Each structure stands twice: as C-alpha cells, then as structure tokens.
Length: 188
Image (cartoon, one colour):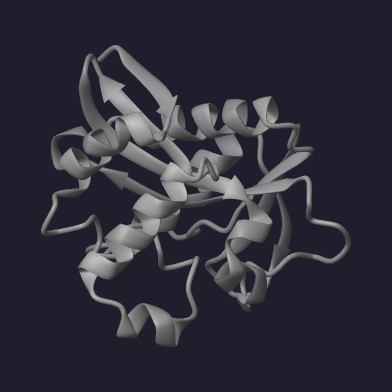
C-alpha cells in the first residue's frame, strides 16, 4: 500500500462521502458529529441533518480531520481538530481536559477505516498524519482517549482507536478515569 493522508477540505468532501457511504454515514450515521453535539441534539438530528451540519463545518474551514488514500481511493478517516471544537469531549467523564488552557491542544477522537483496509496498520498512518496536521496548525499538544484492552472488540468499539497504537506513536498516558480508557497526550 502507498498510503497518503490529506486534510479534509470542501474540495475533498465527495471523497469522505464515498468512504462513509451516503446512506450509512460511517458508524450509525454519525457523520462525525457525535463529539460535536449534545446527546439530545445528536439523537434528535436525522442522518441527513448530521451530514449537512458536518458539511457546513468542512466548508467553513474548521479543521475536522484527514483522509487516508490508497492512490486516489479514500480508505480511512481520522477525526482530529482543536479540542475546543469538540464540546462533548470537553465534558466527557473519561476525556475531559486535565485543566488549564486547552486552546493549543488538539484531539484525535475517531477513526473510520474501509473494511478491506482494517488490520493493516492504517490507524498508525492516520495518527502520524494527525500529528503532522496539528503541528502545522500550531498545536502544542495532541491528545486521544483510546480503548486499552486485550479482549476481542465488538462491532464499532474501536472507533476511538487502540491505546497500544498511540503508545507506538509516542503518546503517553496522562490520566485514566475508566479502566479501559486512558487519556493520552503527545507534546508537539
């Protein structure tokens, strides 16, 4: 595989739609809005409303993440952006900030990988791309709150990434508020 990563822009929107599936919308029609809305707002919004809301964010040039490509084919997604742009994560029991100023902190919060590309190290490629993207935008640190377990994952569970992959990318655990969900950080 010759994988490249590119920031999601309005010009690459159709690539995201091709990866997520227009009807499917990634995991259960989330359209990457799960961490951007309150639970009530998310439940109330239709898939189309979530898609349109995310499309509006992308068109406004708010950094939302990056796509992985195998040649010209979009094969993976990593949601990453300023921590402050993810209000549900800011309030999350397991992922809330440690305190202090978070204006220079970015957060990796979700992955979606096309089925034929799963289990081939694409998450690591996306993490490396996210680190680079955050650095280019002046972030001082990047965080994640992945799953840390050695048991077999159930469908959809790994969307936050796996702690071991983040460790391999140089992230360090800075808090653990739940047994299987470390808050991890890498200084940039």
